[in-house]
Image 1 (cartoon, one colour):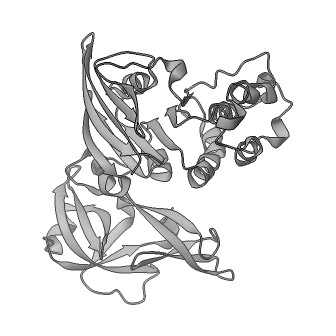
Image 2 (spheres, helix red, strand yellow):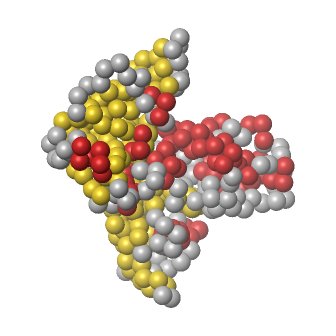
Image 3 (cartoon, one colour):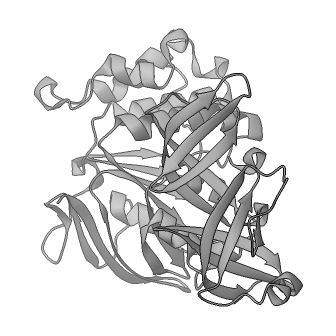
Amino acid sequence: MSRIEARFQSRFGAFALDAEFRMPGRGVTALFGPSGSGKTTLLRLIAGLARAPGRLVVNGEVWQDEKTFLPTPRRALGYVFQEASLFPHLSVRGNLDYGWQRVPAGERTLNREDVIGWLGLDSLIDRMPHQLSGGQRQRVALGRALLSCPRLLLMDEPMAALDANARAEILPYLERLHRELALPVLYVSHALDEVARLADHLLLIEAGRITYQGPLAQGLTRLDLPLAHRDLAATVLDAVVVGQDAGLQLTRVASGSVELELAGLHGRPGEPLRVRVAARDVSLALAMPQQTSILNLLPAEVEELAEDAPGQVLVKLALGERPLLARITRKSAQLLKLEKGVRVIAQVKSVAVA
């Protein structure tokens, strides 16, 4: 199985880094943590832009160990920064061709026109960078990085400098790349909604140390980790569209044995769809409610409870083989006499499922 293995240990002024991790050799891995936790430092070490004792192996190729240190130009990687940093004197076409022309024809692993199509750059191809919006510039920067045909793509908070509208514009393109590419991507962010939408695998970093590495869905729902205790705490389910009702504008999806109805028409039957259920949007009952407006009534079992914000409790539920988080008041937990093993009905509004 292809994978990326890294270990770095060093001190940068007052900051100590002691990080070791493995990530899959394909798909999106999110490197998530608060400001100052070491995300960008780790990314620069992987890129060879900074140096510290350690080891880095990318799909079987040693980029760094005790005897080897490949300089950045010899590391087959693409790097997308917070700012697009396009060449101002080159058109979109010229910026894209900058990376493409440096790859020998026999080593090109992507099709140029495919990348342009995936990122929606066809209509922008003759524009100059000053004629582009922030989201458009970042799409061009991503295209330029991809057309260098990297074996690893590094993205350092690529939407941090964008406003909400630009972020909403670029996210669907990133999702499309996620579906289309077999390339491993290390995506740095401190925005949990981005991570939940894009990533498969999670590296959680705090004060220079990796505190969790593993599947995203597990990391988001572990009550001993900080992500479950944030305002945006949520469960992510990778599902498949199994039906739609055009008249009622509802979409039915299935994730394993769990079925949910979502407001609106999303995707097409048979297509994959990632859904996100916020913990604050899940309520609990001990028996199946009657005559309720809530469409998603899911039999579940209490797996774990943890104190959360003042007067609140996080409840981790088991929906068969799938987890689900619910945030309720401590009073509600006491009234329902919740403890491990108690059977409940999880109630999720269709309009609350993202």
